[in-house]
Length: 221
Figure 1 (cartoon, rainbow, N blue to C red):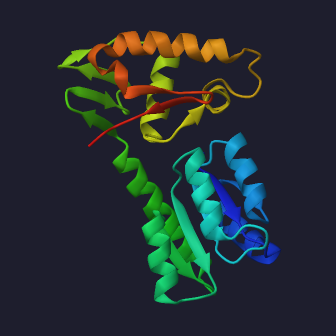
Figure 2 (tube, rainbow, N blue to C red):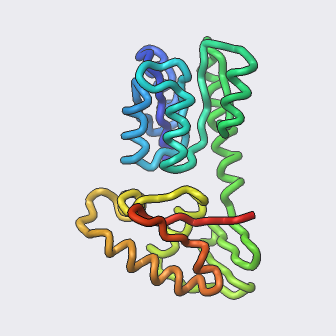
Figure 3 (cartoon, one colour):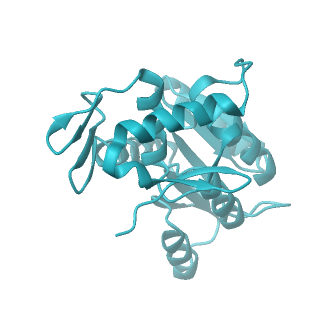
């Protein structure tokens, strides 16, 4: 089920979008400001965000920048302003689409579907030199030879790839891979990372240790 986060300080707008999303059987999360949105992103595996620009406490641009520090999530910006500058700034930051208020809820749903479809196509596989990860087949190959890893190692690697070049804390990994009901500690993460590095062989250095935080899957183009 697609998990949609609606971030807007106007309750009526959130309710309208939620109603149309639920018709599509999307699971909807709501936030009335940027800070609350960040909490939801940290605690849930959100697939797409509909984000208003003009909000109190933390505006949409600032919220999006902070979300990207956690992980990359496809985002559609909403704004009551239609100035070209606002759109350009949004796209420069990396947003996927932009809609000006007032908007058609049906058109928003169509754009959500388009962005989701585009995003899914982009992550069907990952290739770096002779390392290939096929997300559909759930396989990892190095030099055309399949590498055997545990299910948890595979989940960690795919999470790294989808959030490449972003520093990820051990707590984020525990939440994303094991969930908040897991009663382990940081050593669980470190042990799995060690095994994953060993299995990646010559590509082990792609997983970089970030001191006092966690790890980063670093790709240098």
